[in-house]
Length: 229
Ligand code: 2DT
Ligand code: MG
Image (cartoon, rainbow, N blue to C red; front, side):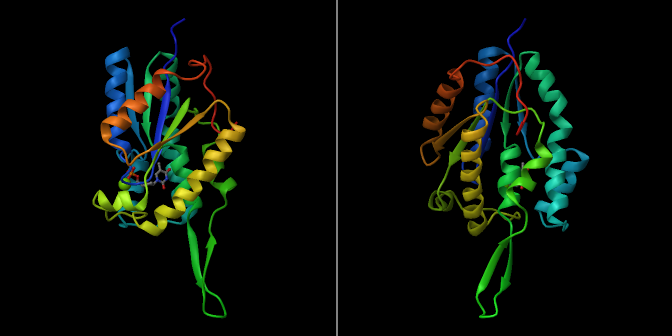
C-alpha cells in the first residue's frame, strides 16, 4: 500500500510569516515527493468563505457564535478531500487550521465598567465550546507555531486593517495558543507541536521547518487521527 502523506499545519499570529513559510514548505514537498497540496483557512473563495471575508473586513457583523461556526464549517467543507488526498499519498501543508479557530474565538472579551468605574473584561466563549465544532476533523501530524513578539510584528510594518489585527487582541490570542499547546501536548499524542522563533530570518525558519518535517519522530502513522478525539 502506498504510504500516506504527511499533514502539517503552520500556525501563528499575524505577521509571523505563516503564508511565506507554508508556500515554501509546499514547494519543497512538491519537489521532493511530487505530491503536495497547499491549503489556507479561512478559504475565502467558497460561499461560506465569502461570509467570513465580509466579517473580517467589517462589512458585516455576526454573532460571535455564528462566525465561529462558519470558520469551522469552512474547514468541514474540505475535510473529506483532506483525508482522501492524505490516503492517496499527497502531503498537505495548511496555513491556519482549527487551532486558530479556538485561539481567536476564545480570546474574545466583552468590556464593561464596574460600579467603581474600572474596565472589566469577561470571556464571551469558553475554551471547550470553541473546541467542539471542529471535533472529528482530520488531525494534522504536526503543528508548527511561528512565535512572534509584538515588537517584531511592529518592525514588519505592523498589522493591517482587518478585524483582530490589533496588538491587544493578538496578545490575548497568543495566550490562547499557549493553552492549546498545553492541551495538545498533554492530551493528544498524535499531534506533534513545535514552536519556532519567528524573529529569525526567512531562510533559517524554512530550514528548521524542512528539518522538522523530514524527521517526524515516529514516521508517518498509517491512520489519520481525528481532531480532539
Ligand atoms: P488570515 O489573515 O490568515 O487570512 O486570517 N481566524 C482564522 C479565526 O478567527 N478563526 C479561524 O478558524 C481561522 C482559520 C485569524 C484571517 C483572520 O481569521 C482568524 C485571522
Ligand atoms: Mg491576516
